[in-house]
Image (cartoon, rainbow, N blue to C red; front, side):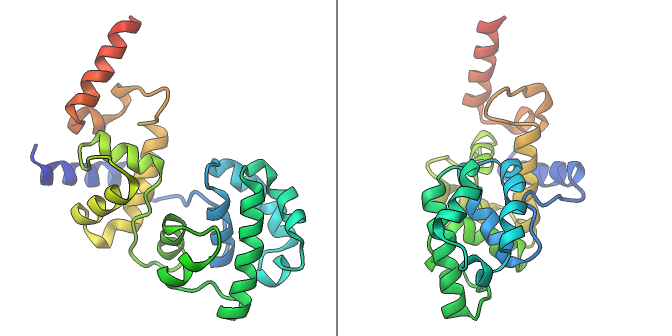
Length: 221
Protein backbone atom coordinates (compact mmCIF):
# COMPACT_ATOMS: atom_id res chain seq x y z
CA UNK A 1 0.00 0.00 0.00
CA UNK A 2 1.23 3.50 -0.74
CA UNK A 3 0.84 6.25 1.86
CA UNK A 4 -2.51 7.53 0.55
CA UNK A 5 -3.94 4.00 0.57
CA UNK A 6 -2.73 3.51 4.15
CA UNK A 7 -4.39 6.79 5.19
CA UNK A 8 -7.66 5.76 3.53
CA UNK A 9 -7.48 2.35 5.20
CA UNK A 10 -7.06 3.99 8.63
CA UNK A 11 -9.98 6.39 8.08
CA UNK A 12 -12.34 3.68 6.80
CA UNK A 13 -11.44 1.13 9.50
CA UNK A 14 -11.94 3.68 12.30
CA UNK A 15 -15.25 4.85 10.80
CA UNK A 16 -16.45 1.25 10.77
CA UNK A 17 -15.34 0.57 14.36
CA UNK A 18 -16.55 3.91 15.81
CA UNK A 19 -19.54 5.20 13.80
CA UNK A 20 -20.58 7.15 16.90
CA UNK A 21 -17.78 8.50 19.03
CA UNK A 22 -18.04 8.73 22.82
CA UNK A 23 -16.40 11.80 24.39
CA UNK A 24 -13.77 10.54 26.87
CA UNK A 25 -14.14 13.30 29.50
CA UNK A 26 -17.50 14.09 31.13
CA UNK A 27 -18.40 17.79 30.94
CA UNK A 28 -21.38 20.06 30.33
CA UNK A 29 -19.82 23.22 28.90
CA UNK A 30 -16.47 24.71 27.77
CA UNK A 31 -15.38 25.56 31.34
CA UNK A 32 -15.97 22.09 32.79
CA UNK A 33 -14.25 20.57 29.73
CA UNK A 34 -11.25 22.86 30.19
CA UNK A 35 -10.89 21.82 33.84
CA UNK A 36 -11.35 18.11 33.01
CA UNK A 37 -8.70 18.24 30.26
CA UNK A 38 -6.28 20.06 32.54
CA UNK A 39 -6.79 17.36 35.19
CA UNK A 40 -6.21 14.58 32.65
CA UNK A 41 -2.48 15.38 32.26
CA UNK A 42 -0.64 12.22 33.36
CA UNK A 43 -3.93 10.81 34.69
CA UNK A 44 -6.48 8.44 33.18
CA UNK A 45 -9.80 9.78 31.90
CA UNK A 46 -11.60 7.23 34.09
CA UNK A 47 -9.98 8.72 37.21
CA UNK A 48 -10.73 12.27 36.05
CA UNK A 49 -14.40 11.36 35.52
CA UNK A 50 -14.52 10.09 39.12
CA UNK A 51 -13.04 13.31 40.53
CA UNK A 52 -14.71 16.06 38.47
CA UNK A 53 -18.23 15.47 39.91
CA UNK A 54 -16.79 16.11 43.39
CA UNK A 55 -15.10 19.31 42.25
CA UNK A 56 -18.00 20.55 40.10
CA UNK A 57 -20.49 19.93 42.91
CA UNK A 58 -18.67 22.77 44.73
CA UNK A 59 -17.67 24.85 41.70
CA UNK A 60 -18.62 24.30 38.06
CA UNK A 61 -17.87 27.88 36.95
CA UNK A 62 -14.98 30.32 37.48
CA UNK A 63 -16.91 32.54 39.92
CA UNK A 64 -17.50 29.69 42.37
CA UNK A 65 -14.03 28.24 41.76
CA UNK A 66 -12.24 31.38 42.98
CA UNK A 67 -14.28 31.29 46.19
CA UNK A 68 -12.39 28.09 47.02
CA UNK A 69 -8.77 28.22 48.13
CA UNK A 70 -5.98 26.57 46.12
CA UNK A 71 -5.61 24.21 49.09
CA UNK A 72 -9.27 23.14 48.95
CA UNK A 73 -9.05 22.49 45.20
CA UNK A 74 -5.82 20.55 45.73
CA UNK A 75 -7.46 18.29 48.32
CA UNK A 76 -10.28 17.31 45.96
CA UNK A 77 -8.12 16.73 42.86
CA UNK A 78 -5.23 14.98 44.67
CA UNK A 79 -6.06 11.53 43.16
CA UNK A 80 -5.43 12.96 39.66
CA UNK A 81 -1.75 13.59 40.42
CA UNK A 82 0.30 16.81 40.01
CA UNK A 83 -2.27 18.41 42.32
CA UNK A 84 -0.08 21.36 43.52
CA UNK A 85 0.45 22.57 39.94
CA UNK A 86 -3.07 21.73 38.72
CA UNK A 87 -4.85 23.40 41.67
CA UNK A 88 -2.84 26.62 41.18
CA UNK A 89 -3.61 26.44 37.45
CA UNK A 90 -7.36 25.97 37.98
CA UNK A 91 -7.52 28.83 40.51
CA UNK A 92 -5.34 31.12 38.39
CA UNK A 93 -7.12 30.52 35.09
CA UNK A 94 -10.52 31.04 36.76
CA UNK A 95 -9.38 34.52 37.87
CA UNK A 96 -8.13 35.31 34.35
CA UNK A 97 -11.39 34.13 32.74
CA UNK A 98 -13.33 36.51 35.01
CA UNK A 99 -10.97 39.49 34.70
CA UNK A 100 -10.15 39.21 31.01
CA UNK A 101 -12.89 37.17 29.30
CA UNK A 102 -16.11 37.98 31.18
CA UNK A 103 -16.11 34.59 32.91
CA UNK A 104 -16.22 32.73 29.57
CA UNK A 105 -13.70 30.32 28.06
CA UNK A 106 -12.15 32.12 25.07
CA UNK A 107 -12.61 30.57 21.65
CA UNK A 108 -9.01 31.13 20.59
CA UNK A 109 -5.83 29.05 20.72
CA UNK A 110 -3.81 32.15 21.60
CA UNK A 111 -5.93 33.13 24.62
CA UNK A 112 -6.32 29.54 25.83
CA UNK A 113 -2.57 28.92 25.72
CA UNK A 114 -2.00 32.08 27.79
CA UNK A 115 -3.90 30.48 30.70
CA UNK A 116 -1.85 28.85 33.48
CA UNK A 117 -1.42 25.05 33.19
CA UNK A 118 -2.97 25.10 29.69
CA UNK A 119 -0.69 23.86 26.92
CA UNK A 120 -1.27 23.39 23.21
CA UNK A 121 -2.82 19.94 23.59
CA UNK A 122 -5.36 21.12 26.21
CA UNK A 123 -6.21 24.14 24.04
CA UNK A 124 -6.67 21.85 21.02
CA UNK A 125 -9.07 19.56 22.89
CA UNK A 126 -11.16 22.52 24.07
CA UNK A 127 -11.21 24.13 20.61
CA UNK A 128 -12.27 20.89 18.91
CA UNK A 129 -14.69 19.44 21.47
CA UNK A 130 -16.22 22.60 22.97
CA UNK A 131 -16.24 24.85 19.92
CA UNK A 132 -16.06 22.47 16.93
CA UNK A 133 -12.96 24.21 15.54
CA UNK A 134 -10.76 21.76 13.56
CA UNK A 135 -7.81 20.70 15.71
CA UNK A 136 -5.73 17.57 16.15
CA UNK A 137 -4.72 17.18 19.80
CA UNK A 138 -1.99 14.54 20.02
CA UNK A 139 -1.92 12.42 23.17
CA UNK A 140 0.27 9.40 23.92
CA UNK A 141 -2.11 7.01 22.09
CA UNK A 142 -2.11 9.06 18.89
CA UNK A 143 1.65 9.60 19.07
CA UNK A 144 2.23 5.84 19.50
CA UNK A 145 -0.20 4.78 16.76
CA UNK A 146 0.91 7.32 14.15
CA UNK A 147 4.43 5.92 14.61
CA UNK A 148 3.29 2.27 14.56
CA UNK A 149 1.36 2.99 11.35
CA UNK A 150 4.42 4.60 9.75
CA UNK A 151 2.59 7.91 9.28
CA UNK A 152 5.13 9.96 11.26
CA UNK A 153 8.76 9.57 12.30
CA UNK A 154 7.71 9.74 15.96
CA UNK A 155 10.33 12.36 16.93
CA UNK A 156 7.92 14.30 19.16
CA UNK A 157 4.23 15.19 19.51
CA UNK A 158 4.72 18.49 17.65
CA UNK A 159 5.95 16.61 14.57
CA UNK A 160 3.21 13.98 14.93
CA UNK A 161 0.54 16.73 15.00
CA UNK A 162 2.01 18.38 11.89
CA UNK A 163 2.06 15.05 10.04
CA UNK A 164 -1.51 14.18 11.10
CA UNK A 165 -2.80 17.56 9.92
CA UNK A 166 -0.98 17.18 6.63
CA UNK A 167 -2.21 13.68 5.73
CA UNK A 168 -5.77 13.64 7.11
CA UNK A 169 -8.56 15.87 5.70
CA UNK A 170 -9.32 18.82 8.00
CA UNK A 171 -13.07 18.15 8.08
CA UNK A 172 -12.52 14.82 9.90
CA UNK A 173 -9.81 15.89 12.38
CA UNK A 174 -12.18 16.35 15.32
CA UNK A 175 -13.74 12.90 14.94
CA UNK A 176 -10.57 11.15 13.87
CA UNK A 177 -8.38 12.14 16.82
CA UNK A 178 -11.01 10.67 19.19
CA UNK A 179 -11.39 7.52 17.07
CA UNK A 180 -7.61 6.98 17.19
CA UNK A 181 -7.59 7.44 20.99
CA UNK A 182 -10.34 4.82 21.45
CA UNK A 183 -8.63 2.48 19.01
CA UNK A 184 -5.31 2.85 20.84
CA UNK A 185 -6.91 2.00 24.16
CA UNK A 186 -8.90 -0.98 22.88
CA UNK A 187 -6.73 -2.54 20.18
CA UNK A 188 -3.22 -1.08 20.21
CA UNK A 189 -2.13 -0.33 23.79
CA UNK A 190 1.45 0.26 24.92
CA UNK A 191 1.29 -2.70 27.31
CA UNK A 192 -0.42 -6.05 26.77
CA UNK A 193 -0.52 -5.45 23.03
CA UNK A 194 -1.98 -8.29 20.93
CA UNK A 195 -1.16 -7.70 17.26
CA UNK A 196 -3.81 -10.19 16.09
CA UNK A 197 -6.53 -7.89 17.45
CA UNK A 198 -4.86 -4.77 16.06
CA UNK A 199 -6.06 -4.95 12.44
CA UNK A 200 -4.64 -1.55 11.43
CA UNK A 201 -1.08 -2.11 12.67
CA UNK A 202 -1.17 -5.69 11.41
CA UNK A 203 -2.08 -4.45 7.93
CA UNK A 204 0.00 -1.28 7.53
CA UNK A 205 2.40 -1.29 10.50
CA UNK A 206 6.00 -0.06 10.33
CA UNK A 207 8.24 -3.01 9.47
CA UNK A 208 10.65 -2.48 12.39
CA UNK A 209 7.74 -2.44 14.85
CA UNK A 210 6.23 -5.63 13.42
CA UNK A 211 9.62 -7.38 13.34
CA UNK A 212 10.29 -6.38 16.95
CA UNK A 213 6.84 -7.62 18.01
CA UNK A 214 7.31 -11.02 16.34
CA UNK A 215 10.82 -11.34 17.78
CA UNK A 216 9.48 -10.69 21.29
CA UNK A 217 6.66 -13.17 20.83
CA UNK A 218 9.21 -15.70 19.65
CA UNK A 219 11.25 -15.34 22.81
CA UNK A 220 8.17 -15.83 25.00
CA UNK A 221 7.06 -19.01 23.31
